[in-house]
Image 1 (spheres, one colour):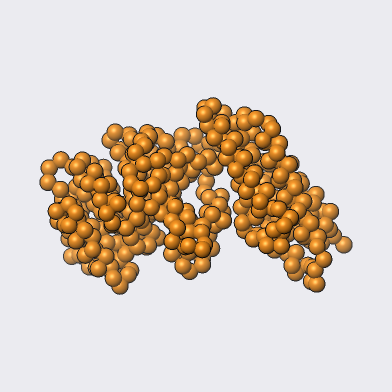
Image 2: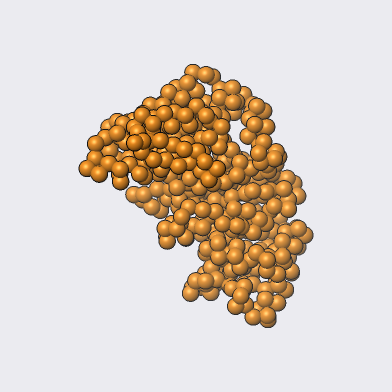
Length: 408
């Protein structure tokens, strides 16, 4: 799996994969991810030229652009090519389009069979995103402005125990220039909220530009190649592996039932990770202090502000349960109280039409309180209720959710 277009920095990666194939290389290009684009054939042609120029290898296009529109003869030809191939390559396009057209198709089953029989897959960009269980709708969110969400991926590695993967190439993307396009073009505020939508059992595999994570299922080993690094995020804990590093495939797996995973794993964190967790908490504390400084109160971005509160709360709870020194945990707890108070001061500020301007902020705090209650962080949830009550906002918890109104 890789990130980045078919340029020279990746040729070493592809050459490494090719070197692992015994006998003649039978390489094919799957064009499904870009099948909706008018220049889909041009993208395929560039891939063919690239393989011929760099590796002196013929790359045959197994065309399957649209599952519904594909003619029987087209599907049969693609199947025959896949069944004979020992190197399958797929790349740019739309992750959701690829997943929708692959899943449930004979093409997907053929690809799955080739992987089980020892075939080598090079999935980059959109194809890499689609192969996880959770697929990020990049175009829909980044280009169209749809709501933040995850779509269903093809879960190609699920049968090998690599369940609940969310694969995110272009992890360190910087194309935005003046705006944040890291985290697969999502930017940090949106990525925080997307991360909160995933189950605790999920593993986020972030792959930098022009970087690859080589997963050797037979040897049970992952290795990092290319210009950057890869990042694993599990249960809010982040680990980074630079180019040249390797680690067991086991690191990508979840071992405990989803409901128990956080409690089961945190007490087992080794001492070297405790210092890392403490450092992460200090960094979250610093970012929160900057975000909630009174000098920037008038410029708060509500989504980003809530993201800072979530991140600081999660880091604090994980650090506390893992046994990180109480001093830094206490500082984080005090910062949360101060941030909520500052937010309350802003809510209490006089307005020409106070009720209409209060509504989005109150709803934001009510949503934050609900998530804190779900995480059993009762003290912080009560802090929000008490602060809202002092401002004349009454909360009522019902089976359908929390309602709020102004006190009479």
